Length: 219
Image (tube, rainbow, N blue to C red):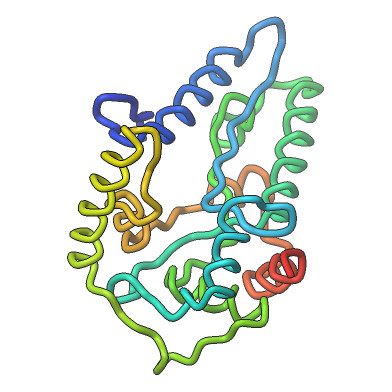
């Protein structure tokens, strides 16, 4: 798929990734440089400073009892250890290509290519947050979960967005906002067959083991 930039892509963060990929791809082949692009999906695990601690913090504060939408939206996650392993495989493949006496078959090339790397275990997003909370010591029973319709959350998001924007004179963003409502209810899964075929990638750590390790690191 083509990279998506502004103004088609409204989220500022996403075009920064596209720009980074464009820089890497432009460098491909210059002065003998070999490059490859690795794409992970919602990293989690030890050392993570974004999604993992936020989910555990929500669970600790009792917010793990809230769910936005019907909870059926599937998500692909990338455990940090598996992602690091994929990078090592890619580096080794680039070294092999640089030392190869004969041209590499086009359907086997790693140099100049992009690879999506996940755990290969898509699961409902809210099942993941519940599992992370439970692993951190804050379990929630299914009957205790409060389901907030996505449309209602979106309305709250609009109100909070504008309220915080007005009070802060545009310098802050509300924690509850329309953008989060979209990401918390969307289906976001990926095909990792290219990484398996060309890099020999296979996740070394399962989702549950990765969740246990991540939660232990946060506690």
